[in-house]
Image (cartoon, rainbow over all chains, first blue to last red; front, side):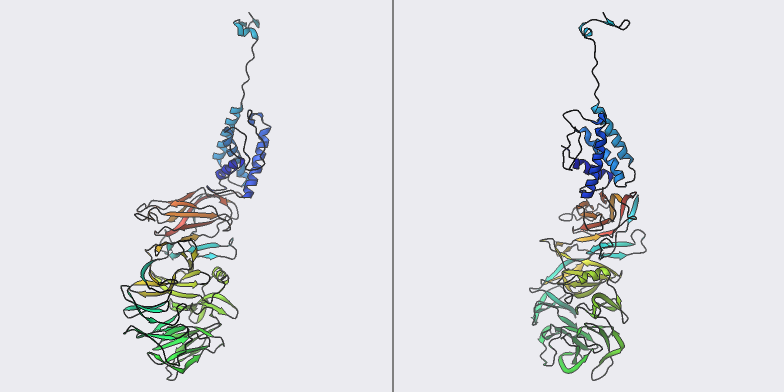
Length: 138
Length: 477
């Protein structure tokens, strides 16, 4: 399972705060974890960001915490966090990260979308016809 | 944004690394103002190629006279011919420590603090000076105007032999005292037919007046208020005299004489390093010139450090030998230097090895040489900088045909805090033999406000660095 630390490290690399093979400093990790939790906090009140059971979106306490989320969340978290880290680390704008983040969030929302089942009157199910003119089953 | 990075420079580690963390190890700067491509370049220092091995070590002193070079290794004195065949010709009393050596053309005088010996060059014979009036405690020797001059017996005196061109006869009255100051005379050297006498606190210059009783006399009012911290560091090159200084105000400045005025050539960074050594009185130096670079090589044996000043650029670099068994760096192995047979011959400080310094050799007698360049901190008004790539501008395609060095690698580390903590090491290929288009490029290099770059190489291949190009952006705060 992906941990919060994995997401943070990937986002810090995307933004260019750390280089490949480099580990983030403790301060950078704390800042990134705060940004991640603020973002998750906002997602928690948006129904389209809530995963279907048994998955659960929750705030993160430690970077080592595993995320109980389907894999589709990984890149949404990574790039959306990267978006926020641009501000945290005073990075000039990175349109590529913004575009990836928006795209990844769209995919998450689509994956969470539930199309309601249509509700039909019982008789329709037994070979009779519904008349749209008189709104009756004949 | 892509910019050229000031990458080449000397060793200079300031009291605060944040101010300056530069290190130049086993490579030296060459200036070429006529080259728009590379006005400054960094070249690897010479490797050592074994030429001979004496059965005894360390190699303590050497001199060229006649068709031979003459060496003291351990307590044995050797003659070595042009094909590097050694011949033992006798023994002196001590087996370690510095040996004063000087030649008058026909005789070579050796002094070791216990006695004096003469090599008869024509006969290749070593004899002890048995004249009871020879000042046995002297440790330094020089030659000028048919006289041997010796000093360093713990007094303020220096002595000369009784009759010109005969180092075997000494008269107890043929001495003089450098008495401008009551300090002990520890070092002596003849330069431009003048004798420089270095005391612990002051120095004097004497010249030959032709006086029949005692020909040497102090030159007018020439008196230097800077003495010498280590007798072995007095060396001449570039038409002047160099030494590690000491006086009643402090110690640890390296001087070169500008006329009779000491000119400080050490930097605060080197003086800081020297101040950190437990002892400096054991330091010694030799000089040599290779491809127009006149090097003053200063070694601190107890501290295990070697510093090198290049008179051509007036810049310092460090030299070190990397122990292949444990990877630790220590003093550079050469202990003394003789230019003979068109080669720079150096003697090993531990073993009986004699090596040639060769700029086209890339190992220390087979052991890898660690070359390293660490830049100063680069910053952009203390805003965070984001680095996407760094390409070290260097000669590539220098790999060997096979074996170690066939696929040479350049290692990179960087620090974002001025040199206090470092990233993990990365490697990039600098190209096998003939792959001149190879690029030593590193990607995704993180961010920081005080960025220091460090490249290292241990492969036995040519090392020539001209600069670096960095791709990066300055953040907004």
